[in-house]
Length: 277
Image (cartoon, rainbow, N blue to C red):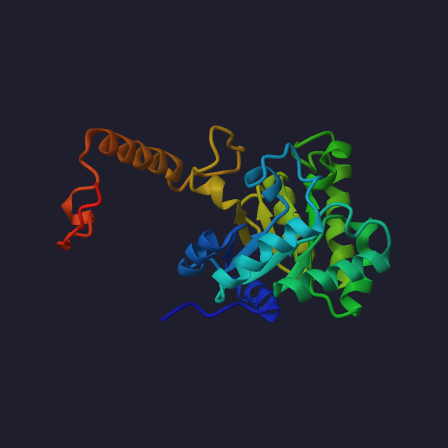
């Protein structure tokens, strides 16, 4: 029997019951279908596709068209998994009207279950307006990759009492604005615990320690697919990149040696070929 797809109401229910869950990424149909066969409950089609799929240096260059193009096949590939569509940089920070318009577009054109956007107190009014317009919103605070440069780069956030307090205030502001969950990225474990205890919506932690309600990892990171770069908070649960390279090399060797294709991989029906030469 397949897994039952989570709903937005389940997020808070899971937190109330103390039930942990998992949240991974996918950017294409095949990966989404694999996640759908797993026990992982949530998929993010993140703007991290900039680096993972498109080879960019940061997430800033990703467009709405890029996101829609990648979210649509993920929705098709994972019908039993809750799908989150990331709103890219520049798609919601100009005005409330722009945010609502692009949020509507992401939901209508892809069929994803909610949108995610970055920012704390400064985005609360925008998020409140989006939620009132009927758009389910997942928040994202702590390290926010779209604005990482202004935060001093990809560094741990909340390492001082003042910055930790700001993150807690951000979480409370987003909860008051109507988000149903919040991604918390790259903070000390004690801050992850404090934020989780400060709000009633679930905290989805990526590099936020063990006390959050849900653990988040990029699929290519946790499966060892993304090369040599590995953030401190990433545990590699498999070595898929090595397995893929080994398989490709075996194909290459057997082709050069003539071992492949052997008879079992050929169509062996006898056919009378007319003499044409």
